[in-house]
Image 1 (tube, rainbow, N blue to C red):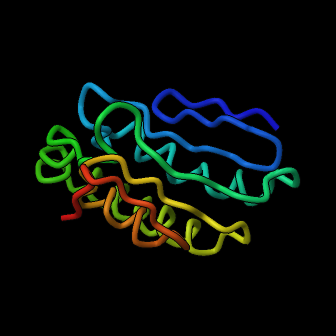
Image 2: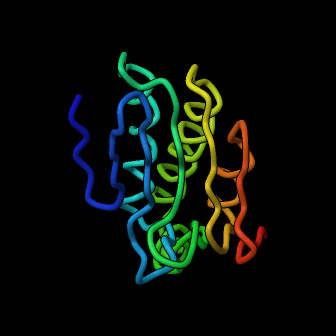
Image 3: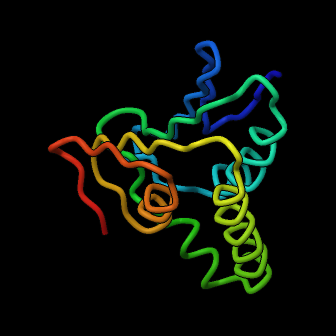
Length: 134
């Protein structure tokens, strides 16, 4: 199964899938593109018969700083964006919680907002000494 995303990197090592949030220049803050991709990726992983374990991590020095400020401002300014983002947020959280594969969060730095939610919804958290949650 091939995974094709702009802001997420999915790598396979045997039965292990590593999902990396890939916006290191922004501490992996979730922009509109990443939010939409997160709303799809966990359902795709659930349908992957070769995936037995999922690892979540962030590129660079952060797990995920939460919502990107441009996305947050767009949500304030545009009710349609707020509604879409709210629906996607439910889908992200529920599809992560419904995964039949165990999920390990490998928290390598700040995990805030949605980043903290993704880590806390995982089955196991491994946090480096640089990890923080907020």
